[in-house]
Length: 302
Image 1 (cartoon, rainbow, N blue to C red):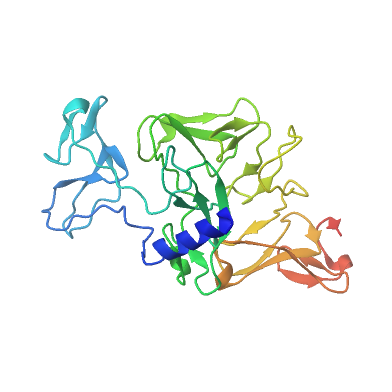
Image 2: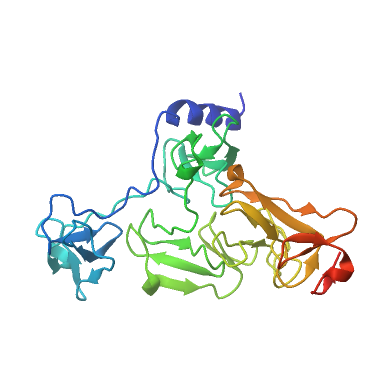
C-alpha cells in the first residue's frame, strides 16, 4: 500500500465521525447580567459588554498596555496574573511542527480538498470522496455550509509566521498561539509568502483566497514553483475563479472576453474553470450576456 493510500484510508477511517462547525469561537452572554464583561474568545486583550437582551456588544473594548482580560475575575489584569483562553478554530491551514501522527488541515484553495500532514514533513493534498465532497476542518461532509473560511488567519504556535490571505506579499508574525492582529502584520522584502514553508520566498506563488481578484499567480522572479500556478491575463482579470456565491461572473471586468465563470451551489468555496461564449461572441461584463463583438462597450480580448 502506498504512503498516500495509507494516509487517505487512515484519514477517512479515523476522522469521518466528527462533525465540526466553523463558528465555534463566538462570544456569549448566556447566564450573564447586563453590563457584565466577557472575554473576546479570539483575542486575550479584548472583551465585550453584555447588553440588556443578553447579546454581546457589537464592539470590543481593549485592556491597557501590559494587561490581558482575565477569564476568572472578568477584568483586565497584569499580563503575568491573567488567565486567558483563546478558542482554537476547527479549521487549521498550517501543518503543526513535530507531530508523531498524521494531522488533517484544510486547503485554502478548495473546500473539496484537504491536506494530510505527515510526521515525515510531507503535505499530501487529497480530495474528499464524492459522497462527502466538503471538508469542514476535521472530516469530509455533505454540508458545504461547514466549509472552512479561507480568510481566517490563526497562529497554531508561537514564533512562527502565517500568511495574510488578502495579500500574498504580507504575513503575520505569531508571538503567541491565537489570532494575530494588525500590529504583527509585515511585508516580505522580496517575493511572496509561502504558506508551505512558512517564510517569504522568490520561488513562491501568490495565493490570495481573499484578495480582490481571488487570484493565484506565479512569482515573476521565480524560475520554479512548488505550488500550482496560473496567470492573470490582465490587471482586472481573474484566473482561476473562487466561487463565493451562485451566479455568473466575468473573467475580466474591464473588457469583453469570450470567457466567463458559472458558480453553482456545489461550487461554493471551490475554484472553477472558465467557459466560453459560443459563435465567437463575448461576455459583456455589465450585463453578463454573450453578445456580438460589435455590441461590446469595452476593448475586445479573444
